[in-house]
Image (tube, rainbow, N blue to C red; front, side, top):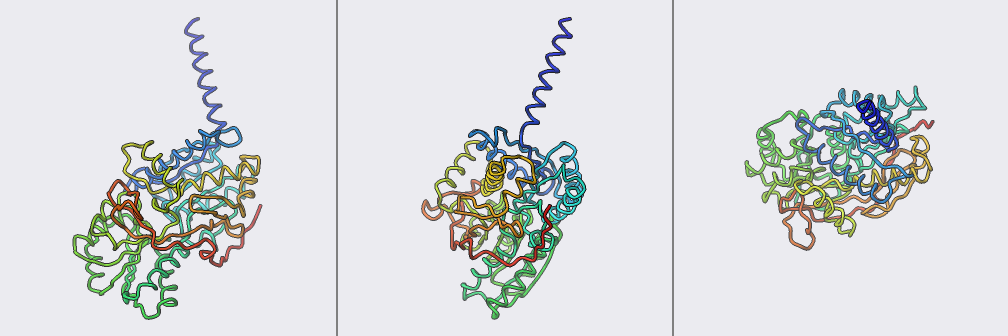
Length: 411
């Protein structure tokens, strides 16, 4: 009798726990937690979890808590689709992803078909870092919102920085061979000649994503070309290994990067990168706002053994989601998506706006340079490396807006 009672109590407790979890606003995190880019995915997951905890500590949203549900996609489009289908089967209505525009395209295609066939089970995709411009142009879809500046917006910033450097006459393009890397190459070839027709593009190489173990052959080609600068969209190990090979070969070029501050890269860059590695980004640790410094300190306190501290602009994703839910008075994706269109939000870097016509977040963009910590312009280190980024230029939101070819169908 007592055993039956204990079993009943245990079952009741499980049922209550499941019901409580079902009340949470669950967001599937579909990114690499294994494989060559696992360190990046794990870092991003930690940032999302901490930001969700901070929101939950102040009451969550509409009486509910945010819950981040990790789903390992191994950086594979096929595995990502399987994880999306698993999220749908679990009744999850929100997903987030950022590592790889090839993955983003697969998710958009699958999600678009699902939402059209199952409007009552719609899923909203919060894209925090997959920046192929096509995703908010010809491939735009109502249930996809991007929170990072796209590759063309960032390239415009890089080109402006290069244009101001009169000493540069030869530039090399080196990128990963997938949607984003190809977009970086295209944008550089389209924008640079218009702004600085005197600059030669002396090389344009694409390499397999996450497969190159030794970048020495590419460094030899860059050296032989006479290039003084390299534009690269490489990220994760593909950037860290590239910069390491450059250092070992004594190649003193300027690297204009999209992801120079991402986990693992600053320690690999080290002293040889000081003054030579530049980054275009929507955020970095030394943007100078009090809240940015506060959240940086909170992260290090929350994860005492973690070296990474790069992805704080992910707070825009969850904060805007909460704001949209509160405006819609609902957690259902359709009214939330409608509330998010055109929404203005006060972020760490100033006011940001979610464009209604293509669902691209408009925000300031920074060009920064890798530097030693000096307690002044470079106060906060990245990756506990002793180095950080100092702002060279801030491009205001209104100057980052580009035309769009998006022709969105709305439900």
